[in-house]
Image (cartoon, rainbow, N blue to C red; front, side, top):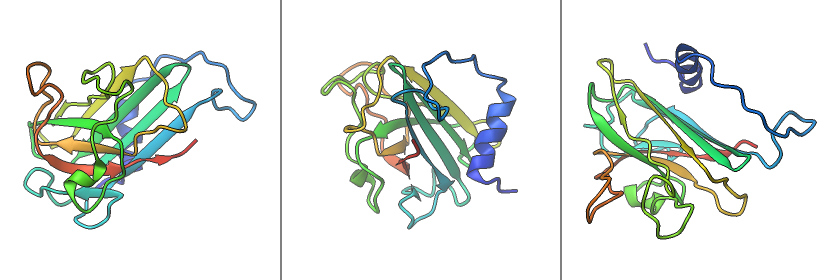
Length: 185
């Protein structure tokens, strides 16, 4: 049974238990002051750049992904939930600077908070391992806030786990799929 991506996020969030409460300055509208939220989700197709698969061997038909980036109070929290991927397999995932396109390289390079810094403090690394059903999830917390004039525009899922050291630090193999992120607030 295929579960809509938004429902998938809600279900997996409920299973993980309640997150710790956040204490932040809030506007009368209920959103934190200066908050930025980005979101993207969908079944990975071969043609729709909102949620596109580049490698059907690693992101089979029916695979879905949902990503949310919430930034406020000097902190950015990013979450990723996938379903329908290969079972018990490790993938890399990162925020990228451009929206997804028809070609894997259209999303541009990794989004970096500090230009030229390739590490999990400057970039958002969301590596995950799928379970026996092909579902996986990952989250990251970075101690910096996004600014409206410089935002990531996609989340790219890669074929390998992110290399954490050596001359290829930050790389994670070929681009398997991409989800375009849109500003929600």
